[in-house]
Image 1 (cartoon, rainbow, N blue to C red):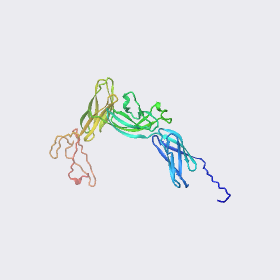
Image 2: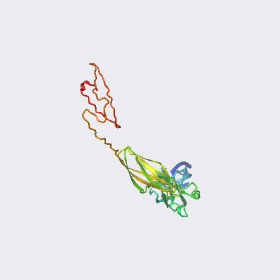
Image 3: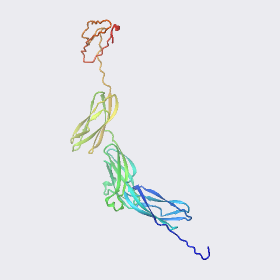
Image 4: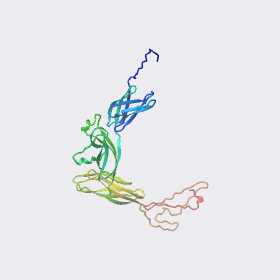
Length: 379
């Protein structure tokens, strides 16, 4: 250092920077954005982080060694469908600089937490248990609803409480009861959400919801009876099934026919305390064996059905009596003219003759025609 000179050292802090970041994610799902940090100096950085905004989170401290690169992981995890604003401040303890990020997060419609497959015999009650997460920081009271035309209720519905309560940031078990009256495969979107009282108390962002997709396979009960039906092809037979109404009101049944060549009414109405006969027609078009069914269904009595074993038999064979006659004579079918016929023609030209034939029977007759002296005739 030169004697008498003065050396000044200045620490210059950069101006405060602001960057805007947008986030979007389904409710209860998280998305993470890595913010790059480049330390091109010869001193280690210690970055202090302050995160503000519902659903935004990240580590409080990030160390960036000299001459290296690092990333600050900023996560957005919405607990409901919402739009929130937030802020991230990164303060460098080494040089005093601060980087500010303005944040905007969009919580979209939640995806199903799980896909649940249930096998439910028709007319019977099936129970299942759902593990419902609580991602919020509050205690919530939940209720259930579904988007399917079938009875799905909380198992506790028969008691005093029809809702479930879960602690903050934990899981709870919800017992669900399924009752189905019609066989087949159903799909449902099951929604579990906060009650109206907790709608604003749980969080100020919106209703807390958890979704499950349900696949309900309704297995039919055993058939009331197995009916064997036989019919020749190209003909028809009527299947008669007695149906009883033991109720004190009119019973209207929807009828579902399954099987080739079966026809019948789609509904049947039975007066109170009466029995009617449902008629279906079996009209096979080809020989063979097949299986069919007649299913009856109503909300009043549920579902019952009959299994059909269908046999299509070959058509009957008609045997005609044997006809014998001498050569040159006829039996049963005689030409109108049995006298010898003559035909003449000029040499080099053609001539023709018409022979009328009458069929006196009610059945078709086939004739074999034989010409003698074939060299004189043109076919």
